[in-house]
Length: 92
Image (cartoon, rainbow, N blue to C red; front, side):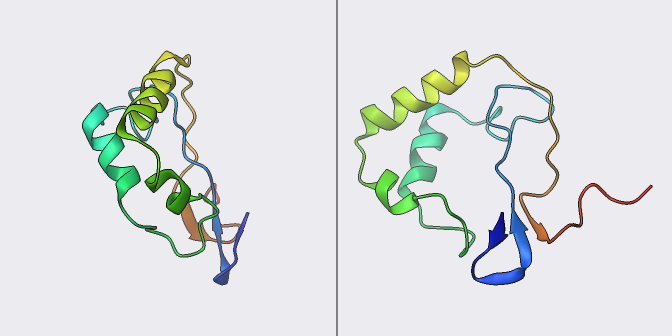
């Protein structure tokens, strides 16, 4: 989807499955996951509701992390999640 703060950029959802090669949070511990949701928005145009997640309890965020660990791993490289519009996959 287009980045509303920069129309030359697009935002793509990362692979959140526990795939060891392409899963973005594969190496994250539960503590790292919870802490990330306490942090601020990293990409200004991201549609992710970081502010809403930041108000959730540690128990609720840990439950989300634990659920994501049960999702079957899918190897799916989405490329950079914030990138120039239409730039991925790279031309052969």
